[in-house]
Amino acid sequence: MSFQITLQPSERSFSVDADEAILPAAIRQGVGLPYGCRDGACGSCKSRLLEGRVMHGPHQLKALTAEEEEKGYILTCCAHPQTDCVVEARSVPGAGEFPVLKLPSRVLSLSKPSADVAVVKLQLPANQNLQYRAGQYVEFILRDGARRSYSMANAPHLLGSPPAIELHIRHMPGGKFTDHVFGAMKEKDILRMEGPFGSFFLREESNKPMVLLASGTGFAPIKALIQQLQHKALTRPAVLYWGGRRPADLYENAWCEQAAAELPWLRYVPVVSNALPEDGWAGRTGFVHRAVMEDFPSLAGHQVYACGAPIVVESAQRDFVALCGLPEDEFYADSFTSEADKQGQE
Image (cartoon, rainbow, N blue to C red; front, side, top):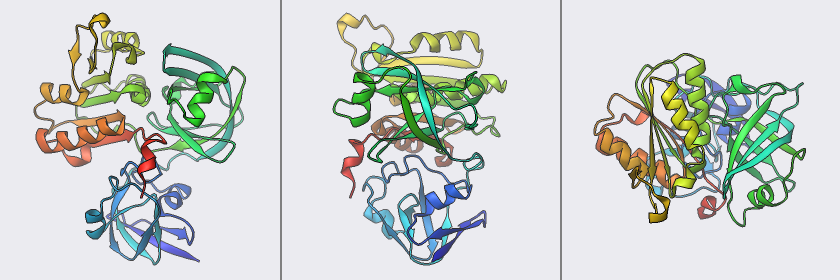
């Protein structure tokens, strides 16, 4: 048995199997919907059910509150149709453009630019052409079937030869995958992965100036976006705000400074929230999204691309829209929801 989903306003239709949620069916059929974590934690896939009935699987209440559900909102990543449905959802051209592949990868190199961040380069099979958009992510499939998501930190044109992706992985002590990365992983190890996923990528049709907001390893997909802008010779003004607790958290600060020096359209503002006297930090301090608000009291004519810890992304979205006049549909985000973040699921 399957159900028919019709999207508004695009009027595109696709089928969903009886045991399937709406979003994975859309991804499988190349239909571009907004989404982030695919796990009921971030709320990026929130859409409105106009007709029909769904049942939700486990999800976090902050991603979809009871009040929102009463008003007809659903999370397409965990909403299982019980009837044919009509769903109001923003179409994302390009989100389903490239095939999702399962493929092995081999560890080419592993470096640690700071105590709790690893930069891992993974060689891809030459006979499987992984195509993706700068900003998208892959999922590692662990031996027990669990999955972990990481964004590519290099734009597609920088895959190189042999083709390789760069990932930035923060150590979460006790984390099944990151303990392995920081403890046992070595060059030539083989990892199984699947991708590309995500609707976080550059909207190239716009010419609006951009705020690029990153916290911690949320810098990875932002780095890929900057590389993509440079490659496409797009010169829309952009300001990169990168926030960390201590200066060492800005583990590629030199790369950002060099990019800002070389690219006339890019400015870089590093922000540290918990600098200690011994850090000798003379730059901006406080919460990174507040630094944006100090510099841009009005974001009415901007686009914002935000990536990092959920609290940073959620605070930025709320405050930029409510206090700085940013149009709701010009905030693009990839919230880095860890397994610990997902433990609050209902």
